Image (cartoon, rainbow, N blue to C red; front, side, top):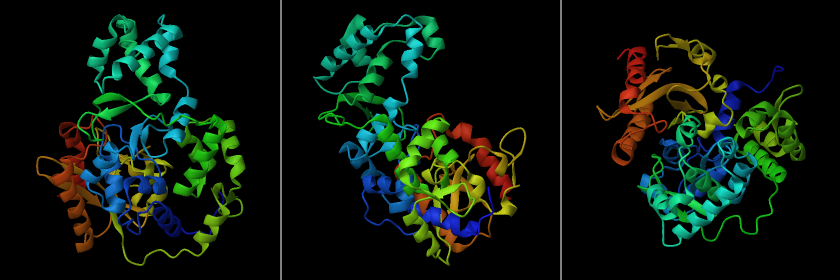
Length: 398
C-alpha cells in the first residue's frame, strides 16, 4: 500500500463514526442500527446483542421484540447474519450456491426428491410452527436418512436440504425456540407474505448493492477486503464494485471510498475525549474488514497473548481471540465474561481510569442481568473460555 497522509488515528475514528461507535444512536430501533452499521453475525453467540447495545443502548428485550415482530431476522446471507433487508440477504445467499445439495447429489439424492419433500414440509407447516422432529414426523418417509456416508458429510438426512432450500426461497423462516439470538435451536414457520414475492433482484445487482452498502458501513476499504467479506472471486468482486465510482483514499492507495464520504473524511474531527465501547469479537467493526492490525497502535501489535500452549502476538492472529475494547476506533484491550464471578475480565493496553471502568461496568451489568453470559459463538462455553480468562488475568497482572 502506498503511504497515506490520513493518519491512523483519523482513519480509525472515521471507521468508528461510520459504525455508530462515537455518537450514541439514541432511540434508534434495531433495524435502523443494522442498516447503519451492517448486518450482525450471530452464530449462536451474543454478537447481535452487543452490537445493538454498544451503539444504541438497546436492551435484550427490545432486540427480542424486534425479532418477534420480524423487524430484524437471523437468516442465510453473505456471512450468515442478523439482517433487516430480507430480499437482498436471501438473494445473496442463493447466489452463493447450495453446497449441501451438491454433496447430497453424490449420495444418491435427486432434485425431484428434495422438491417433493419441500412440498410436504410446506403442508406440515400450514398448521403452525414446528420443530425439526415434529416436521420429520409429519412428512414421514419423504425425509430419509443418508446413513453413515451422509453423516461423514454433515448430512444425516434429507430434511435439512429441504429446510435450507425453503429458507432461501423465502417460503419459511426459522424461529429461535427461546426467542433469543444467542442460541441455535429453532422452530420453522411459513413466511407470509414471502419476502421474495415480486423481487426481481439479479445476483449481479445484489452484489453491487452489497458493495455499495459495504463501503457505507466501513469505507474506506480495499477491494480485497470486500472480496473476503462477500465471498466473491476477484473478477466477480471487481464487477460488483465497478458501478460504484469509488475513488482512492489517497493517490496510489488501494483503500477505496465514495466521493461523498471522502469529502466528509477530509472535514472530520475526531472527539478529543475517549469514547469507550465494548463489542464482540465478531462485531461488524472488526469483521467487515478482518484487519484488526490497523486498529492497533504500533506498541500493541507485538503483545504476546498466552491463549494456548504457545504464545502469539496480537498482530499475528487472523482474528480476535476475545471480545474487543475500543476507544475512537483504536483497539485498546480485550475482554471476556466470567459467569463464575459474574464479572468482565479484561486486559487494557492503556492506563485504567474511572471512565474506562464505568464503561466496563455498564456492559458487565448488561451481560449479567439481561444476557446471563457472553458467548462468542454456539460452542463457546464457560469451561472452554477459562484458558482465555486466565490468560487475560495473567496479562493484566491480576
